[in-house]
Image 1 (tube, rainbow, N blue to C red):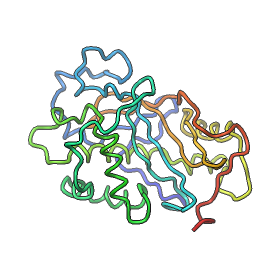
Image 2: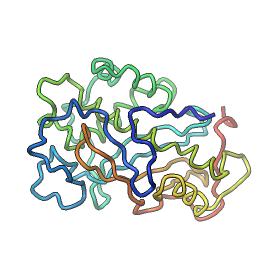
Image 3: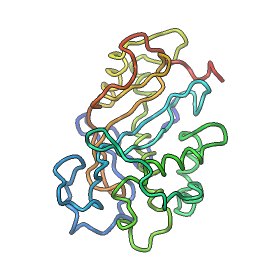
Length: 267
């Protein structure tokens, strides 16, 4: 049985209208009379405050990992890689604000009341053994600090240090929870196996059949190990909605002969 449970995310609605809503609406910057309600990243946002819409990183990738050698995370679940704010043309910035490279993401989450999120991340956002915090710090420093709507000048007045990172990790985690890749594939009869192989078309069709949109799949030595779901964002990391669209590229997997190896075979 899958370990996914809904947590402060929109359910999968009609396929053409899937959206992920931030759970932080009450903490959001009070800018309702300033921010246009329909501002959507990568659309016509010229003249819109960068606190109101993600720019220039308005193409967001929620990327998941299937690490089977060595095995990481539950045997029946993919794990979080991160949430990447790419530019609308697919280029990207990295390490945008070293002044916010917090000494401890774990402490940041605790100080901002995210103990439950932290417990969840220790199971589903995992690095090498004993290296979860290092992994989280890298994702925040490299990607989270590049998100314009949680820049320091956009944060609620008087907010705790690290609330920006708490927003980032909550949104990335909620997006992941709404995209149970293991379930998407298993519902189409595609489950980890040591000998079976699949075509790229079979895998992407299974995902689209459940999610409504095409992902980008990546492989390592002919075996499936990463998936990216693409979104634009309406509003902000604090109070916005992720709007899905088809991946503009299909990743690194070959057209045929793709393995989906079980984690348990490598433990």
